[in-house]
Image (cartoon, rainbow, N blue to C red; front, side, top):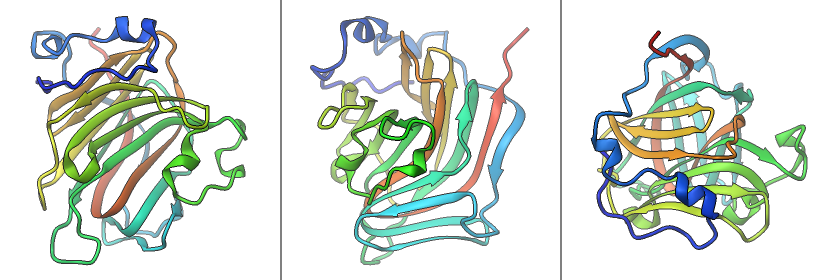
Amino acid sequence: MTPTTRRGFGALATAAALSALLPATAAAAPGPHHPRRGRLIASDSFRHGLGQWSAELESGGSVTASHGVLDIDVPGGATVWFRQPLRGPYILEYTATPVSEGGANDRVSDLNNFWNATDVRSPGDLFATRRGGALPEYDQLTTYYSGYGANYNTTTRLRRYVGEAGIRPLLLDYTEPLLTANEPNHVRIVSDGPTVQWWDNGRLVFDYRDPEPYTGGHFAFRTVLSHFRISDFRVSEPRHPR
């Protein structure tokens, strides 16, 4: 079921994009089904370090991968990129737990993602452009961006960046669902042509039809002043009914 509280669409979203949005009740009706996995494309057990990842940290902090957990514990902005580019269709999954155990960065907020990201300043190589982890440095991406429990765990939003500085078009803006301290979130991101979906614990949070979809690029975990433990990262082909 999708959230029923919607604050409205950003003024920068195009008319075509707005007309492609499903009504808030559509995902509750028979239609969108929990996607099924097919062939495995990529994965990380988080037992062998950060070889598959690249971290961009605004104010330092700690990003480690060991014993089955990617641990992101940061006092400022952090973007942790999966180095392998992905091309749809795919289903990307992971489990993330917001840590609240009294640590310096244990603020329950900002389980965010970029996906199908390309930097217009170096479209052939995302990592050829230097970025330092502050959010405005990512304005010149073409990408989808989800912010789950952002802004001190008060908003859940979907954006579609268009590669222009200062412009982050807002597509969907909810006041719930939000994060719960120390509770795991099993996330599924579906990139399948014009279908853009973001699921949490079996609930369809975002269901967007993009008339001009981004179909490939890089994925990243994005957060700010927070502590997350992430596990079970995998990317699979979707298996469609025959």
